[in-house]
Length: 434
Image (cartoon, rainbow, N blue to C red):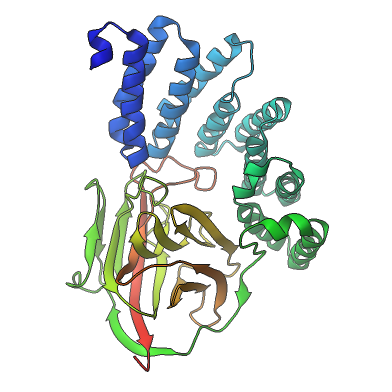
């Protein structure tokens, strides 16, 4: 290492940090920890508080993603100690409170979670951090839901949306407004007041029509719809009973995930940190090649109550162009439709399925460059998750995947072994005339 050869201590610390950050960006959180830890120790030795603070931000995030809650807590408390010695405003100040709220949530200490989230909100408001204000309101609402205080939850979800709609910060346009909406629906339904959710949505559209018009794919809820009847030519069917069909390709970048046949389908086990986002495309998946217009369906279920279930249908052209239709990212009864289009993230919709049991049905239809997504919880009454336009030359890959980025405000626990998702009845149709 050049910096080390020239006794450049700060340069050495920076080099170790950037090595660690490069691994983080690829999804290799375990390997990154050692480099970032060495960078922290070196920056502490030189008394460089700012570098130490930034490094701790990254290592806390890594420990939380890996489910190592004790180490995350230790570093978050040290981060707070550093913050108390710094007299000027820095952009990482609310994060220590956010991290400690996650630690308390994993312990199911909801009052402790609320305390840290309130401190995060207060600090963010004082320093003018718009994005952190939105996050604080969202997670305060989720925590109140965990406590069964749905009225307080509703208040915070609505404040999150109000803050976004009234903010002059243009960067918030990329914030995923679907999340507070789906939790808001869940809270109103828990109070047996679904009509109030619909009334709120109408009021939101009326009050902020000019803002909503500029948002990409603004969708308040999933809507009842009938899938196309043109796809009747069943060209492939797999009940996942015995072994992987020869047409599939298994992708497991870090060789730390697995799939198992149970006689009831195939279970995909994803290690923590496995993602399909940005430069981290390490989520385990089984995909097969397809060309032309098609429709694909599968059934997604939890494996057990001991691990979160996050996964679904993946359409993949390359790392800059892919779509995910997934269950579980925002909770057991949620479905999300998102992906990357021309290298840019695209969040089409999130929805809460009130009557969902163990099984949720997912369907994706391609018609040229348009990909329409559907879901339901009974195999009959389909709901539209929206449509995304994606230019992708044939052939493309379609299949199933599992996800290992667990939001521990939603799934309360360390879950050091990651996630597990059960898939059944993978079917692929073409148009009858083809």
